Length: 212
Image (cartoon, rainbow, N blue to C red; front, side, top):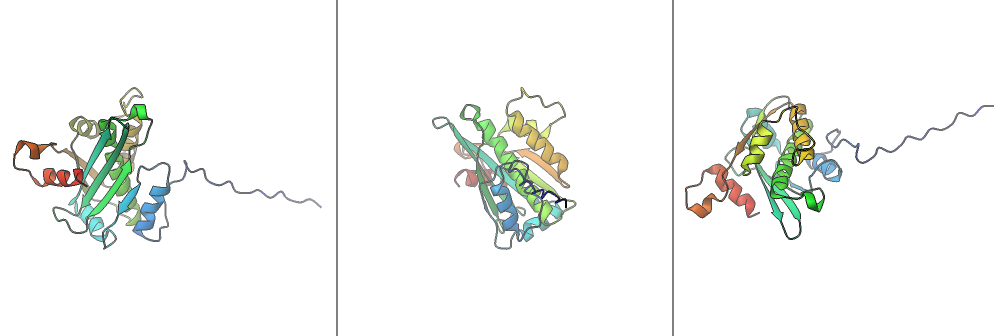
């Protein structure tokens, strides 16, 4: 009598695991999948008390806003990025997220940390789009690195491996192509408070994020 061989299913490699694919028990569970993933630069997410319901509606209305900021310590060669996500100009139902800037020490820079903040924000958006099944909407995304903002605003198919932070630019481009909603970037002038000039909503929010 022939005995059929038992074929055991191979466990999915952590690198191939897609954290944006449900089912999810909650929006926090959805974010936890990204935190556990080797592919997504998210280390901490604090969701609002309404479990992002208002933020999801804001995305659909086109009023949602993200402000991100990256920092770099030249002595330790380590970087971090953090962000706030708003329903609009209101501070209610605020989402907060943060992550370390991944990569080798020799690759770390302020520019890389700023781009990491963009990847962090797009990952947050992608999770919410999947969880709430959003098919249309818009998020306005601001950060204070002018060269980085110009780069992500004008991504083309000609990203070359010699480009600085090529890996992050590829991630940003790929995520923007897959999202079912629009993301509009804007540059926020940094260090405005030191000049004594009047700050607008975006500049004030960036200052608060810097002090996080």
